[in-house]
Length: 324
Ligand code: NDP
Image 1 (cartoon, helix red, strand yellow):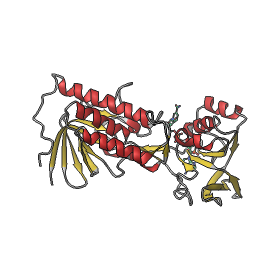
Image 2 (cartoon, rainbow, N blue to C red):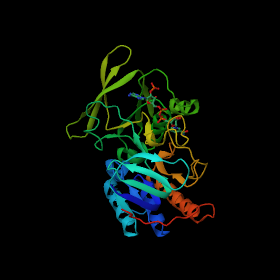
Image 3 (cartoon, rainbow, N blue to C red):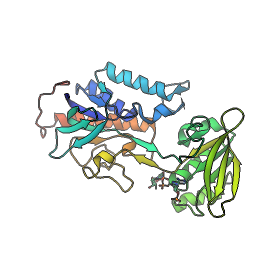
Image 4 (tube, rainbow, N blue to C red):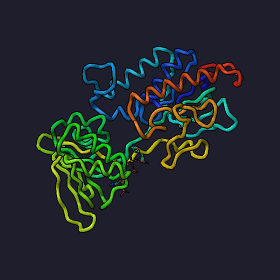
């Protein structure tokens, strides 16, 4: 069992975590990043990425994350494949975390970049056709369905916004909802109902996603939640938009979370309620949820961490990156 000590401990290895690491390393904070269960985060389960600035050609999500990791390591970040199972934030900095490996991590500052995960329906064909017609992000993947027939599953703000967004690319968008009324804000509903490119299938639950002859999504099998009647909807793309779950379980009762479990921060800042603890990326952002916005927040967290360390309020202790 080792003890790892650093000026900046980062939990989570998506765009927010890596960007915090790059800035933190360049500020001589000798960051240690604990990568978590899915190193690279949500982008490792996407394929084509066309909206991350700086790449004129289409790039692959997993490749982008490898590049971020390599960049963070080149400038001095130590990445560790472990999963934090416990944190102790009481008493303020330095903060302690325990890994699944039994190792202990001590950070003068802590950047929480644990991200969020799209919720999935868990029906047959969903995972098999993920990236081949089934997606959980219209902003990321909608562009690939230009002029095609697409469906969105869900009835909340995300589903309605995704359906509206998809009309930029397709004039045949179907919203599939399991009840006969939407939960989304009224103003969004008005926009949805007014849009001639969108039709709504009420009281329908997805039974399965079925591949067409080319191996990509061909149609969606549906069941009426009132009558039990079975039907199918032909679709080239299906966007599951039934909510996201932020990875904040570790911090319940230790930091303020909103009703949906997202980390609360000062408006426009990654600062949490505890000085020296910062949250960046999807863990605290249910609105934008983009790699580039997460990266921006990671940068802000690192700059604030640097300021926190430099501030006279914090008594600096000698930091040895690997005190094992
Ligand atoms: P929500 O939890 O609000 O909505 C999820 C939707 O998915 C609901 O309509 C729900 O149906 C449906 N659903 C859940 N599980 C299943 C399932 N297994 N099968 C079929 N349907 C299912 O999630 P959102 O992502 O839409 O929003 C999360 C939060 O983020 C909300 O607070 C929302 O207001 C906020 N948000 C705000 C935005 C904005 O302000 N612009 C944009 C996007 C999100 P049912 O209604 O029957 O429960």
